[in-house]
Length: 351
Image (cartoon, rainbow, N blue to C red):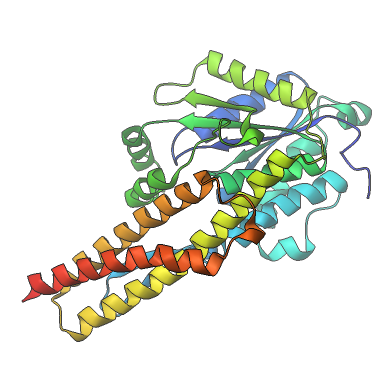
């Protein structure tokens, strides 16, 4: 492997996570400015710019009822972003093309790395030894999303830290609505149900994390606290050696993700069957819309609770010991009973 950036200078991957409009971009600008004054190389990795819009699609039923938003290939695109960072660490002068080129916006990636290749204030020798900071800007609402970044940092013995921007839902919605291109309010409302903030008590790998309250205006003290966290991460890179605790957590996370994914697929099929039954029974349009809304809200709550349960159950510690198919069936049976109750209620209201 080319020595690349790794081995020449300390490197830190800093995850910025939180709801849309929580203030991640504002904090990133302050951190980049502070890093520049310190002579660091620092770059922002904005997932929204890197992942193309076609990664997100909306499925619509024949009767015009919006059933659900399907993030068809979001996981592949997120992995492509991390591959670009990894390729840059190994060969900083070569753009991450090849497999990643079709899954991320290369022009956006070029903008990301221009600031870290060679700052104007530093000569080549200084630049190669200057600390390197990547700020990963995304919602990162599931621990599994953040854990992938942690794994990359551990693979190359990099610094790793997380900054959770805590902002109340009302403020996020208000800020989002003032943007030139706001995202749908229901997206934020749905995400707040799923968001799992860093929890060092449950996940030891999240120990190097900080929470910043961004409901009010970001303060200089907040920025200083985050910079101290990053400095500590740069000085204390991760060890590539895995311990049993981390492996156990990784196995549990992998198992939970697999179960929830399969349960999600099964629930979607059950919802489609319910909608078909209602349509064949000539349920009125307003009742069809109500049925779709209730079923999808029920599914979202069910999957959220299932994921939390799997991540806290002591028995789910080694993925290979779990009969995933059996677990999925038992879990989905619970959702199916609720689905039938919702369908029965709507059918009665339609009479």
